Amino acid sequence: MCFMSYELALNPDVQKRLAQEIDDTVEACNGKLTYEALLGMKYMDMVVSETLRKWPNATAVDRVCTKPYTIEPKYPDESPVHLEKNAVVWLPIFALNRDPDHCPEPELFDPERFNDENKVNIKPYTYLPFGSGPRNCIGSRFALLETKTLFFYILSHFEIVPVRKTQIPLVLSKKQFNLTAENGFWLGLKRRTRV
Image 1 (tube, rainbow, N blue to C red):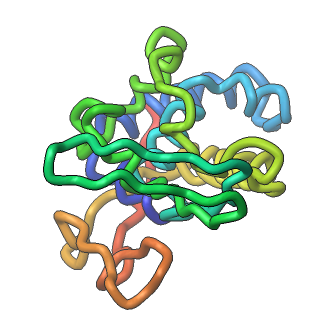
Image 2: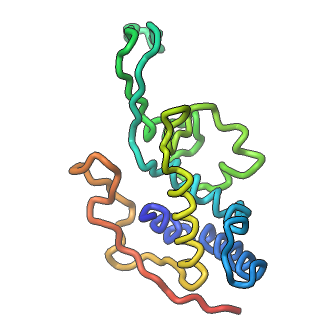
């Protein structure tokens, strides 16, 4: 939620479009947010998905190798990597999401990567915000609903803006395993004016 607030503050065009979708949804459901209305917010889903791509809640996920496997070298000066059965393998989610081979212009915050036309082009297992398969995060649906609901209510009344203490560009803390800002997240809320 902090990273999404940060990206919205730094990308006012994205925030404006999301606020418009929220306003349309408020009107369509007479001010009472419903589960169906929240799930129908396509741009909200795109913004949350892009936030999770750029700032995953887990930097890596571990898996157990089920059969012997060799990762062949990609470059002449590399050696093959041999994985034994039952070896624990870490999949670097942060690195996969920032790899230009999987995600063009990975530093750019672009929710359009997740529109209906583009999301079919995402290579399988290169976008893993909650892991994948039988060991994926059991709380993913709740976390997504919670995040979308929070932003629905915040952005229906406020605009998220940078303030003097907002760190631009964001520097990640090296003191923690999970991603967080080195000096915390400093953002402001500006009451929206309706036209």
